[in-house]
Length: 142
Image (cartoon, rainbow, N blue to C red; front, top):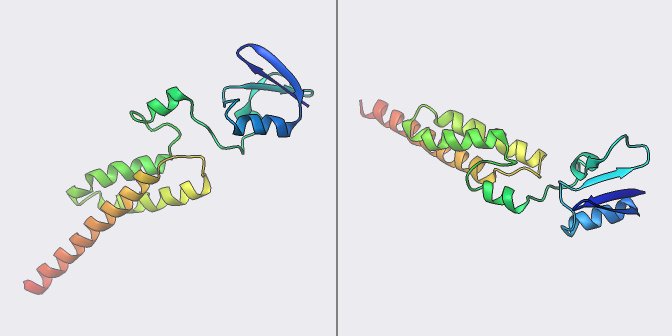
């Protein structure tokens, strides 16, 4: 049986299924503290149930517009390399990190970064293809 705390007020005992339902209904957040007998101290829901998906708080959602919160690091690298791939040199790396980011995001569905990963694949792959065609054209024309 679990106990949980919201705004300094303690509730419970409730079964684990009830905690999960309250979290799924967004009554509880990742910052909610929970405790059950045998647990040495109160811990966050995120630590007690690491497999549940993360719901971002309003502040965290606002922050995602500025900083990559809960975003795959490979997706972040893929996005920046994709942005700079127009300089030709980073294009293969943008493609590589984009593919790695997609694999990472499939393995960790709670993370964000799909847009950055796809951007890295598309721009990196596109610039690599254009570079290869330009090189091939130069050889055939020369």
